[in-house]
Image 1 (tube, helix red, strand yellow):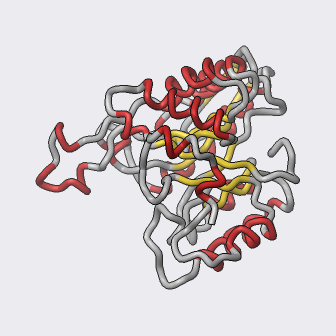
Image 2 (cartoon, rainbow, N blue to C red):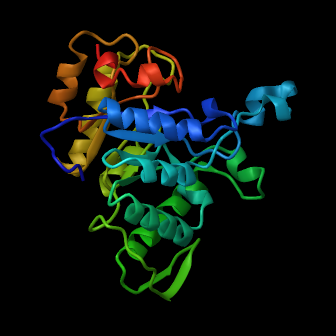
Length: 295
């Protein structure tokens, strides 16, 4: 659901945790990104990070990172920007009430005059189990699928009735609707070469999927070019030329022909989660713009 299929946009994943308790740093970073020519800013959506299991015996209050809420932060960003698109990388929809998520995002889409994207994932075990919710990939996937149907239905502004294993609605109308029609774009994240997330992206509006060597996940024996080609080909076999495809600007070990490959694969977004190889909210680096990150 990109506005212009002939142009590639540049996305910046801002590290929530780098702001610490000074959440306004994220807003300042997004303002700097818009001024520097970035086309989208995205925030992580975790309750607890790093997961306690990763911390082991060192798990304590001092070891946990600050994780400001992405949607409240994006509302502040919306009030100080005019062009840049706003989204999550990614929201674990299965742990949220779909009607509240629909209301929150429709409100933000109105506030931002139609600049919202919903990045969707399944999340991680601690964000569920430590708050009394069950966890399994199958449970989260089926709950996510139901929730997305509910959210999209509520965004229509029409009466919605729904009976599923996880959610039931009886003749519900939720207003206001988003500015964007038929809905806010729903783009699916996950971990390639697992295929379910890419299949889900083909049902909705695209993929923002990590793969080994993309600059976030460690490399494996397969080149980033091969991972990207296989992932996008699998997606296009189901979605055709519809939807957004996010690919990294400069994956680890990529050839000098990487950007040509991205164009050949009809990527609609090039993104980076790290500037010059680091997670940072450094305004000077952000202000260099996306071209400084391209190889």
